Amino acid sequence: MYLFDSHVQTWIPDRFSDEWLHRNTVSGPTEWVLGTQEQMAAQGIEEHQAHVGELLARCGDMGAETDRREQCTVPPDWNRPSRLFLAALPTDPRSLHERLVADTSYTPNQASDILTQVTTVLRTGIVPDAVRANLLAALQVDPGITVTEGVPNFDGVLGTAYTATNSIGHVTDLIVDPVSNVLIGERATITTGVRRPVDDAIYTIPPGTLLGHTATSYGRADHLGEVPV
Image (cartoon, rainbow, N blue to C red; front, side, top):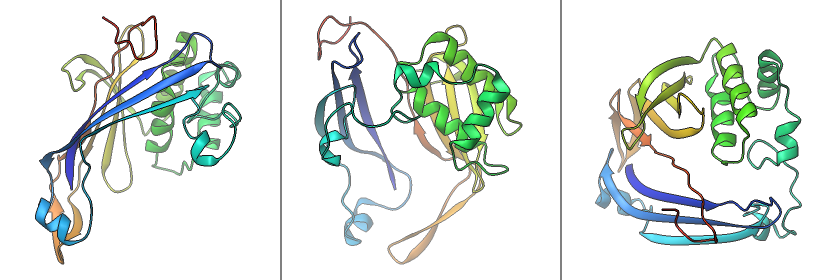
């Protein structure tokens, strides 16, 4: 088990149905958390290789080719929302929380399900200001989600963290800008020792181990693929 660097860039056109560009630059392993490269190879598991991948699709519908269908035909949902989908969400925090619960595998003490759902939709970068505020207010309705100020993203920028812990001790942080409420990062850690088999032996991932940490920023470009200054 290892950490690796991934730099994801998405260019979103002003007109939703125009072509989007998604670019993902991945490095090889940067830090081994559990086991070694040799043990991984012995089990026939391939590690991430450094590469740059690009996808172009209208409506941001990057899965259309894999699904063998026309672009812009997938029904909108939390993973691939449209502007109409977002506009139709309840505006009352409790009603919106009920909608989130209904649309996830939410069970008691699994507030991490709806936190993941909200993080996924904010990650798209198309959520309007009012809807972002409503979503965060809905998270505050859930007793399993805590709010903490001054939590750093991967780049050290401080934000407001919405945090939930699932049933096996995985802690998920959604970090937003305290003023604009835009997503500025995510973090995942573990609070309990988790046992994993590696090379016919059982290893324990120590409590507090960092499983993932991101930083998100935004800019405006005149053309697809052009990096904002």
